[in-house]
Amino acid sequence: MTVMSEAATPSPQSPQSTEAELIAIRREKLARLRDLGIDPYGSRFEVSTSPGALRADFTEGKHVKIAGRLIGLRDMGKSVFFELGDVLGSIQGYLGMKSLTEEQAAAWKCLDRGDWIGIEGETFLTRTGEPTVKVSSFTVLSKALRPMPDKFHGLADRETKYRKRHLDLMGNTESAKLFVTRSRMLAEIRRFFQDRGFLEVETPMLQDIPGGAAARPFETYHNALGMPLTLRIAPELFLKRLLVGGFTKIFELNRNFRNEGISRRHNPEFTMLEAYWAFSDFEEMADLVEEMTCQLAEKFCGGLKIEHKDDEGNVTRTIDLTRPWRRANYHDLIMGVAGADFFELTPAERRAKCDELGVQLSAAMEDHEVVQQVFEKKVEEHTFDPCFVTRVASELVPLAKVTPGGKTVEVYELIINGQEISPGYSELNDPDVQRQRLEHQAGGEEEQKVDYDFIETLEHGMPPAGGIGIGIDRLVMMLTGAPTIRDVVLFPLLKRRE
Image (cartoon, rainbow, N blue to C red; front, top):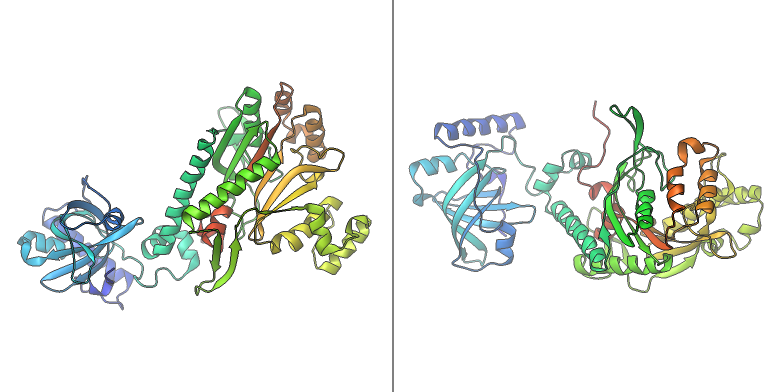
């Protein structure tokens, strides 16, 4: 691809120009276009293909009409080479100035990097073999008044990337490719479930009782109904209502909201997939997630070995998704890091053991929470290749079936890259046991926290089922090697600047 720069544009600007000076120059060109009778903000333009599609399926001697942003310009006096593109790719254009009328030449000299134009012409290969369009006519579609980011370095400041994603997408082809890949992964996930007979459904984002997870909700108020509502923390209880109603294979791919901390792995608004399969169980759901993730890796990542790199491009970790994935007992994993006698200790002795291990605890933690803290800090954060952690303590998962004859539940937690990617359950469908579990979890605030309407629904009979949740943002992070959740969310939540 021909390398072009802002400094080579037909404007008098220089790298030393201030942004205010560059904007003033562009406004002068805006006025000049209008003086020429040209609408600098265009209208409908019929295209025959896109820049990226043309490059991918290029043939010489083809008449085309394409539109895109001027990414680069190289003015050679009598001829101009330029790069035209969008997030899906770019193509080179060639314009012979002698072929233009006086008005067209004047209009062209009003263009800069960042402007949107439509072109019509014939395809050819340059002497160096570069796919190119020889322009016979062009149309101004949008005059950019502010300059694009630096062609070669993009946005250096990470916070600016997140606050002004449009600039990041303009100046960073890798970032643009990542978000295109994310979009295509979501489409593939939908196809994966639909091909297996699952129906996509939608359940309420606004709920009067938050349920399906233990998390702090965002609170709001509906004026017309005169009632407080919350943004959902999970769709689970509504999806199970659909199982009761007769749906047997369903999924929802949508947003959840949790009014909790922000970190490189947490955003208050995040994308989650939940799926339920009647007459299945947690083991069959684990097989489903394993198959789906490997299918995504092979289609979008070139194989089952996923490299994670630092900012300098050095490989820091390689995640191996080769099947079959490991399955390990929750208690066995904890004893592997905390000692074979860890579960024989008293609660006080377990706390003392945590001090030895360097695991920080709060005074308010119950004993099962202490155990879970050891798991998160000493097992989960150090597990990078896929591992289905099974037979979790029943106190941690009130919506799953208890293992016959035991105090654990029929659950897996899929850990990849040091974080949970997906939980899966054999879903609890006994309404009496479910009532007891939810009331215990509510801790004496049953009227506010327990969804008794859901309990009543279960009393109409819910078939045994397997269920899964998949954190889509974390899954995309793992598959693309992105270091933070902000790199895979187009517009992550940031604190407002003063």
